[in-house]
Image (cartoon, rainbow, N blue to C red; front, top):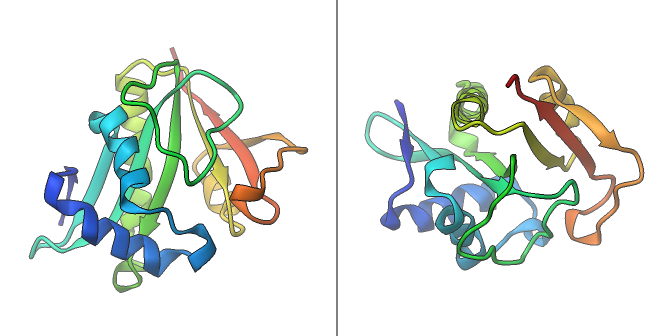
Length: 162
């Protein structure tokens, strides 16, 4: 099993993992997902099994604001900023309890540090804030609200050492 950069032919499998992980009202189309990768291919990864099956993915890109991008919107080709915005982490049901999410989370934290980002920001949905608390993230806004992120989203940040 390994973490790899995303290849052009990975998108249907990534979409399928997304569909396993989220209800229909959270599903973004392939072009929206792909736009995150086009904005920053070096901060987007898949987790593959020994037989090259994609079991999970993480999409992140540079961002220059403490206001997160909206779901369902394509990113511009180049995104800049000193924040690494973690757009999505999803794991296939077939890989639950295998540590895939943890490995991808650690990978993006390592990448954030090595590429000189000041922080990693995300929006936790569906009660995922407890998972992110375990990785050192803290909530930064109690009044964050965006219909595109569903009920009770939590804006969170992890400050990285300089």
